Length: 332
Image (cartoon, rainbow, N blue to C red; front, side, top):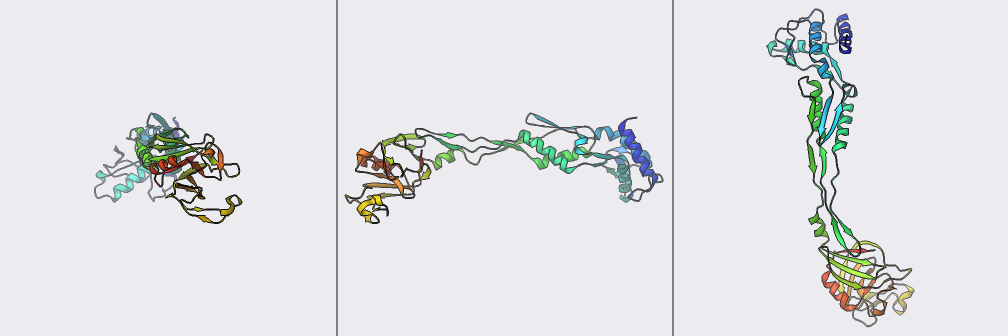
């Protein structure tokens, strides 16, 4: 005797021992003619006899493994993992109750009684999704001090988990349903593409502190390169990624309240004055640090400033024209 037959015999014995929870005596009742369970005729039979017929027709099929195929991956759901419970007697009693409520019992066709673990089903669908899923990757700017490029965007993939759960649940309950399901992979577009990166980084300035060199890039192409001075020890030019915050022609110099400012400590030196170290142009970056021109061209190629990036006057005038406010600045 097969395991399914043993289980059915035990179930029927329990059902025949007493009236069922639904108030129907499985020994005395005869299911009205024309009633079907998943297309199987059970009318004219007592529920116990109908249960035997239902088990013979559907038991093995309902306990078959379900295979899900998605993007070249295969995952199998077993009845044991799903904690599937198929009850042929309950299926017969379900058909009988439906028939007695119907105006025409011959139109009644009910699904078998099948239970399973929703939690296990969700876990299985997550397993399928993990096999298929790939996060989308946004395009982003790649940079060194000498070269810019864009890491390309890449689409991601996923499956419709809710729809797959519904399909598997329907298959678990339906003996006629195919046991091989195909889950369509859906594409997830990246949020940032190459054009977005270019739009945000149309102009980029890089500063190489060790190489004492400033470069200007337009749409990733280098259009200018000049020697610079950077911060001396104790006043290092800060590394990082910034934006040009402001610009000025012949800027005034608000001398900081620091000893190195000398006689101008805490004072404001007017733009264009001989004592103004900022000279002709200013491009502010962060916390008082910026790009500016200098008369001390001997300091170019050295660590000589108090954090700012110094350039020769003709060079900074060209950079001023090339670089709008908001442009990215990368200091390495």
